[in-house]
Amino acid sequence: MKTTIRVNRKRPESMTKQITDQLTTMIETGIYTVGSYLPSESELANSVNVARNVVRGSYETLMKAGKIQSEGRKGRTVRSSGGKKRAAPAKSSAAPAKSSKKSSKGAASKSRKK
Image (tube, rainbow, N blue to C red; front, side, top):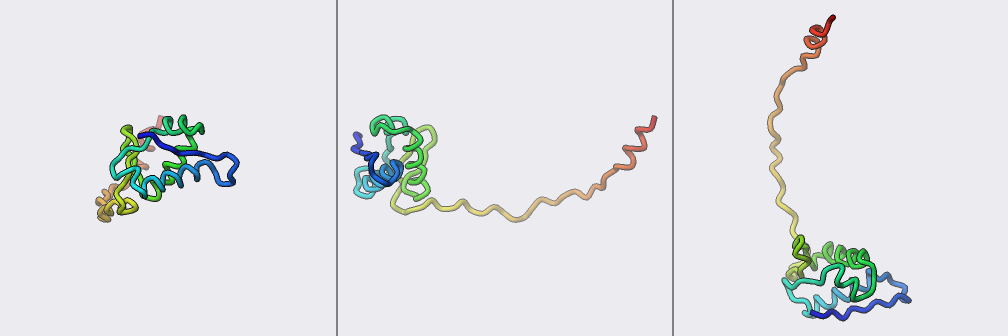
């Protein structure tokens, strides 16, 4: 899918914000559908002629907003319109019982006498 993202370096807003806003619009209008893969950081950076960290910042902002998710090495996909990712269920608060062994500090030091 050919993306038509443009960056104006003379605008007061950062290039990261410009890319984020354009990708958000593309997701909300259905250009990128749920489950579709976004271009890799390097592909998008090369096509827009920006540094890769600019694109990475944009993708991180979209992930925090719950619009996209990372699929590891496969890439980043558009999430369902349900919004942010749900928090993982809380772990059990029952802690394992600790053993009540006392330190045998005195015995060890007595055996070291020369």
